[in-house]
Amino acid sequence: MKKKQKKFKTTGKLSLFAVADTTETLAKLGNSLNRLESGVDFERFRSILEDELTTDSKSNAGARPYSYLLMFQILILQYCYGLSDEQTEYQIYDRLSFKNFLKLSDGDKVPDAKTIWAFREKVSTLGLEKKLFSLFNEFLKASGLILSEGKMVDASFTTVPIQRNTKEENAKIKAGSGEELWNEPHEKYKKRQKDTEARWTKKNNTSHYGYKNHTKVDTASKLITNYIVTDASVHDSQALAALLSIADKDQTLHADSAYIGEEQEKIITKAGMINKVHEKGARNRPLTEEQKASNRDKSRKRVRVEHVYGFIKNTMSDLSLRCIGLQRAATGVGFINLIYNIFRVEQLQRITLSKS
Picture 1 (spheres, rainbow, N blue to C red):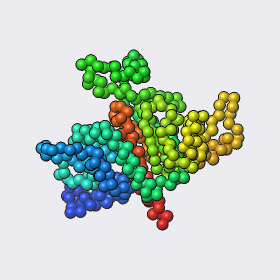
Picture 2: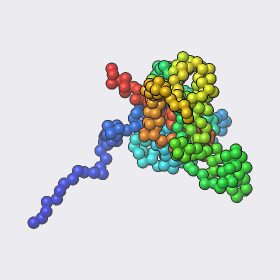
Picture 3: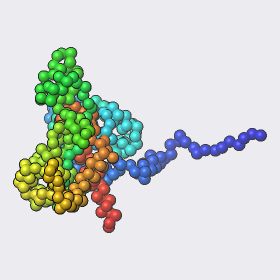
């Protein structure tokens, strides 16, 4: 007896509304790029990008460049997902969500890996990431999203590829004489791959190599309001003076015990802030019960800064970069901090809507 053939759903045929249906399905499944677009109108960055990156050229010869706003949004994707230049190019071609985010259609030419690299280098050389971060923060202040009731400071490691050097080479790098290394003609390509500014450090018996993202965060909104980037060996407290300003006057400052000390107290006082830094015990001088209770009370607000790094770790590239040198690391960290703020704005907007 002939077996009856089973009928299956038809596949491989493109319907008239296929792309729209797929886009809608992606949104329902949780397309994070939709959240990025909801968090900010990227057009607000166009003017500063064109002002900073456009060069006066009398000749119109050569191919037209890609839109600076398009390239900026490509870097947003790259840092959000922790992609290499080659993978960024490939994923734009391959992923519908990337194309939709960039407003590209099938058949549109996509910047290749070398073009992405060159644009990022130009942004890094100009230090443009800090200006873009500041521009967005001006929008946040004007929108009343930064409440300025208090601030939190903390730092997180930014890892980069580990270097394989000899003890003698590492000793020179640590002494600040890294530029004296690999200067022979046959070593010029090797030198390009060597990071003489990243440093090793140890925290809680775990070694870290790379840089540090020191941040100041608005206590109420959990938006990053300022940041600086140093090598990993710089102690958290050493960045405090650069993070605080007179604009923080009369606000509370929450931080863990890494920021305690006479010098730090002077910095906090100079900024006119209310000191809520955790107290720290010492050998033969343990914390009293009152001090422990005070620390527990301070923790209720200070712990909010951990939510910032938790989001970056779980949703973004976990502050892990593929670059060499402090300047490039600062560009990567600046973009990651900016992307976090955009995501956070979208989240705050959803919270507001749910309450209304």
